[in-house]
Length: 461
Figure 1 (cartoon, rainbow, N blue to C red):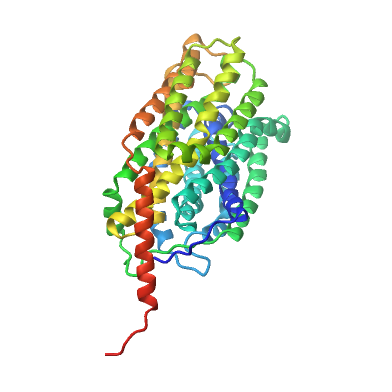
Figure 2: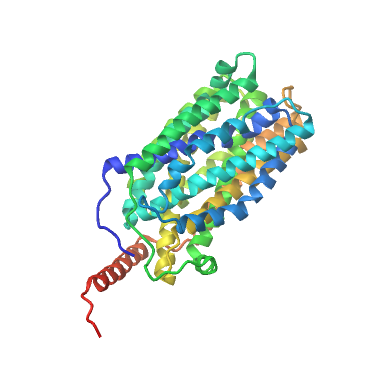
């Protein structure tokens, strides 16, 4: 592998961040509003929606690794991963609109339509987001620079998330007037246009600097074998699944919490906006915390703290607004850095895999990483719908005391447990800063040796 020793410019860091800004026009809508849309707008039961999330995402278990292998084997003048940002920018926009369109079908027809559009959307999301995530692993060979790049990435992500999670329901009401179905469709159309432009800007402002070793032969079996002996990646897979499951459970419950428990939908805007600002602040401070504590220790402290602060939501009463808002801001501040840390740590496992096995499979590593996130989202989203149905939730009606307990369970106890388990599991991640520096130096020496050998004059026999 040949790497160019260059420090990333601020322009390139900002350009890379725009890719996750684009992705979050879709991801945050799905995280916070997919279940609500399917139950209160589209018109299916929470249990049916939960099963949809689980079954549809099961296909990702097959498709995501295939997509990663395809991306690793893509060779164009623009690199292996960047072209996908342009190729799929428009298709994913169209799929997003289709997914949030409510046809006037029978209940059975609606389920078929929901499954088809949901699966197609997530395949396209994988086709653009797996190469985008893999780009972090080849844009620079330096682990510290990746941590900073991840911070830029998630500042871009949270800036858009702040808008999407705060204003999407209000925009749907404005765009749709008396028709919630038309409102949600128009919101997704607007988001799709903006996201497509941001994906193109990300493509045009970044470059790939690293390539697999020249002697590396394409082999899915070898790629999979290398992944399965990559213990840090296995730990990160478990972390990704746990954390995103917790995010999906709490995020998917928030609008229900305000609409049915607090009975104050208007308060949702201030709640999400203040939390978004706190998450941005935490993300901006991530490089400082990473340098002082290391990625592994910082991640542990953030998740452990979030677990302690999330649990009280099970006990808070509707009138305790100061605690409801204050705890949320503190949780958002702690969780803000964790996605950036997670993706930087996943990128580091690609270096570890090359160091240990001699194979670099950045796309495959990131595809499997995305699979863990989608698996967590599927489990969290499915559990969300199933628990609501088990506790007797009924859309667009006042809820029973039992249904309210189900909402509180999803707001407090379950996500707190998820964060606590993730904190404990992170202790098994062994790539501390000292080992990462050793890996970086040894890989650099290997690349220099290969480069010198390739450029040496050849003597005829």
